[in-house]
Image (cartoon, rainbow over all chains, first blue to last red; front, side):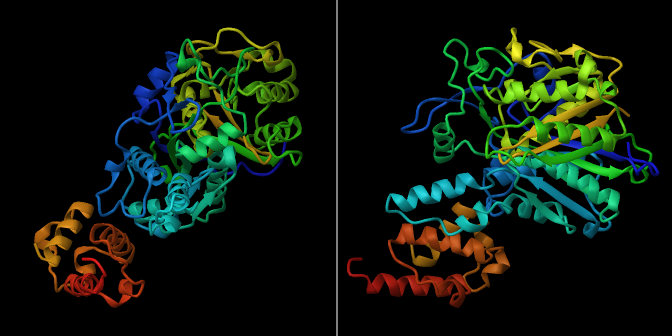
Length: 408
Length: 81
């Protein structure tokens, strides 16, 4: 454990989510706890049918037609969720907008815009004129800055599946450094477009739609798991230092975080980096493994990934592993890639606030290679004494991020 | 319908700008058509009028009347109207 004075605490002052389970936190949480899943069939021309989790409803209504120029689904989802987070925090009209920062994670940014543009080009049509500014990876961040008047650092983190977890970690560092007073931190992803889905199918990592129940297509830790299911959506936190909360109780404290790289393989997960991220995050939070009662796993449902994560947890928790509740909520909402870390951090915070943990939906039996932790399967479970929880995000490219939250 | 009216219709439909605000002699910016929106508008005009608007139009044309005049010239010069 590092010595030195206690760092200033950073609180989660507001939460917003536009997710496959809904846009209302209470409603989405109820669905999650009940073991519901938003995974459904989607069809794209010329591709095998795919299981995926979409955000329901018209997300473009977040802006007027004139304001929609230069935006696409990835920025519209982000703006909707970020506005909800700001409202939840009771903020909005900044006294010092240059002291407000935006830390946004996205894996593929405006991939759907580029996909549509190149599809037009390759079929002899013209590319839309705003393909570059709409499709650029920091496009969503720019739209949020404009519409939420964020004039501090406006940064985009593209770290694949760890993007928004890294963004949240970096936002907290900026607050602790005193660089800003308010951080809007989270992620957005919108990759359910023909070309992007085809690219994921080509990688042979997607779970086929389950023939008997498509909602059960993503089965993390199960012996018959068949891969990941793509999801879309956005989730954001408003983070503030404790003295700036004005006596208002945050939803939880962001107790610590760490980002570490395997430096081994482009896509294969590796214990070394995951152990390093978990160990360093606990150290930053000044907690021992046994203090942590719940882990929201990265748990994508791939054959290769899930046992490695369980092995890393085993290595760090040791004898305390049996008391660590574990679930992967991706079974319910799919893998939001760059937005996954933020959405799963929302669940982790909510678990602490409510003293109950969500399940790995639709899974009833475990792969022996994933045994050890206290898996929460089927439906959620009350854990009244839950004080600390961790959320894992392990990315293609080898970057692993762990966020540790503590109950208020 | 003359070209100005067709353009007013297009702007109204595409961007939800009230027709009464679309003054043919006002600067585009006066009714919130910025450079990016103008690029989108020209793209839609090319589809609707079946013409190629030169890149220079995006900077040389500042009002709807100017844009309508340019379109009328392009249409008159087109081999098949």
